[in-house]
Amino acid sequence: MKGLEEARACYERYGRPMIHERFPEYEGRIAVGLVGRGSECLGFDDELSRDHDFAPGFCLWLTEEDEERIGLSLHRAYRALGLEKAAQRNAMAEESRGVHSIGSFYRRYTGSPGAPESWEQWLSLPSYALAEATNGEVWRDDLGRFTAIREALLHGMPEDVRLKHLSARLLEMAQSGQYNYGRCLAHGEDGAAMLALSDFVRAAAQSVYLLNRRHAPYYKWLLRGMEALPKLSDLRPALDFLLTAENDRDTQSVKQGVVEDLCQAVARELKAQGLSDGDWDFLEPHAYAVRSHIVNPALRAMHPMED
Image 1 (cartoon, helix red, strand yellow):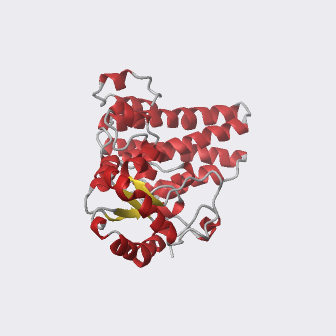
Image 2 (tube, rainbow, N blue to C red; image 1 turned 120 degrees about the vertical axis):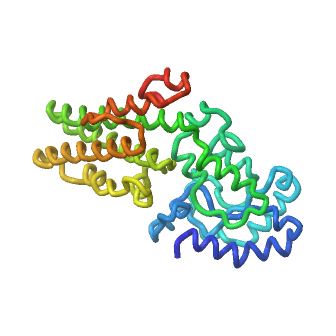
Image 3 (tube, rainbow, N blue to C red; image 1 turned 180 degrees about the vertical axis):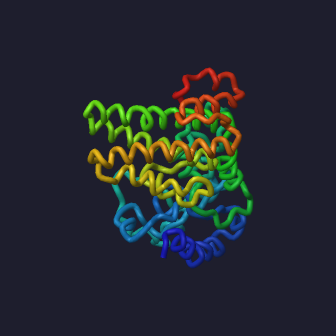
């Protein structure tokens, strides 16, 4: 059973009755689900995932006023369920299951108790933090307060910020993959070439998420998460190939061709979304075409690769 399913089953078997019996007047005010850190929140967990920081728990989210009233007693009631006794925890791991105020939960990932209120805040947030704050499932939220922030984080990023991130990633793809990978090989710097290729793969994957208007997860799950994206998910095997294939001279030539194919696929999607109308092979002019759509003068004035 996957972690999300197990967490849901634990809530239905233990959590829901506990809340109904001990906190009946708050039953419709407590939001419940599983969101946050951990492969189980992405649906990517397997048997190996259970060797650390794993327990069949769930999250209970309270408003600030309810947290003051029942937070401690609800926390004790949750702990008494004994769901996390068998968990093997990393000493650095944070408590992610159990009882939280809505504000403190989101503050852990975004630095504020709600959705960002300015483009500067949006721009400063790493995509993996936004992904962690919005993954998983919410099974009950009668008040709708937790879900309202969740929806704002999922869909509220200003378009100018998305375009700024996208243009920077496209420039990284051009610089690391189309230019520096081949240059490093020509210099005989094979290690530097692999670093360039790694940077290219990460920038390419993040570009795909941005083109899908999705938050890219932590690098460990960056490629795996592409499989569920509606656009350009078929690029994942080629990105895997660039990182895992042998790096002999014959394969290096093939990899350079794969880099160009990936760049052309991204360029086609840019044109399909009306973000670029050029026929350039090099991604750099496409990046500047994307940048030209940014309306905010402060964002347009930033260094092209700064974000």
